[in-house]
Length: 75
Image (cartoon, rainbow, N blue to C red):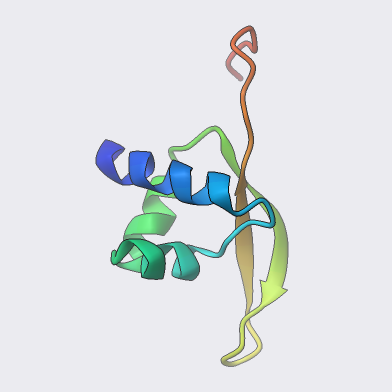
């Protein structure tokens, strides 16, 4: 799982507007389910907004990465 999260961070850093799990999966060549699972363990990634999916009108989360200050206490 750690290897997947280390591949996700640089991708999200490049896209300030954020990406859906499906977009990240396409860029990395991994299943979207793996990306969704990895996101849950990343404290520096959050859901910025929800967007309408092109197929079926479902809403999907758009993820963004933030820098966590070194002196920030854990939750």
